[in-house]
Figure 1 (cartoon, rainbow, N blue to C red):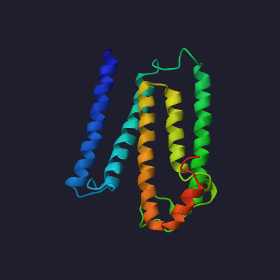
Figure 2: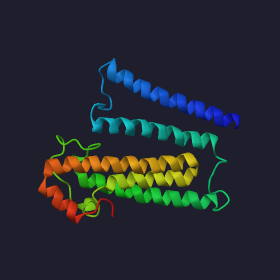
Figure 3: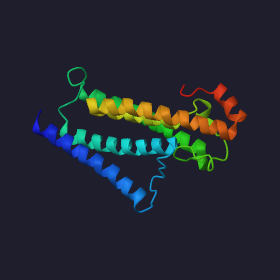
Figure 4: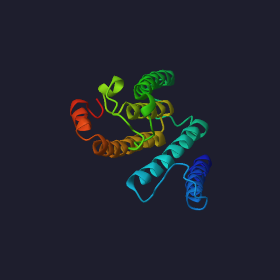
Length: 195
């Protein structure tokens, strides 16, 4: 194993340890809930997992950019400029879905689902085509970054994000069913989870 790989793994581990310990200290000692984690609930555990995952992913992107430029998975198959262009178009497509979804949600937008904050069920615009346009954007975004950086680590993060988002969607659907009952069940029967 090369020295730069060992250094990257150590640096990544320290970063992850710092993020987790800093969050735990803020929650326990300072009585601050910066990310509104309640580790006693499934929703809180999922929020904590997403926070750690997102920060790890951001670090991994930068680590790939600085340390693994020569580790591109597709380097012998496809010219890099083509992958760069393709990933840019995929990102722009996903970002368009994201912007349309934000406009459709208007003031109903929250991170995750907080049943107390959500006042009405949004069923128009992008939400008439799919129940989860925001998550579709994030999946498209992670995929475009994987294509651009083309590393095994980014592939693992992309696949992990798909699993995490799926778990979040299941959790949100349960909350929305409890809050909106028949209205949500009717919407759910007409509009697919993804496409």
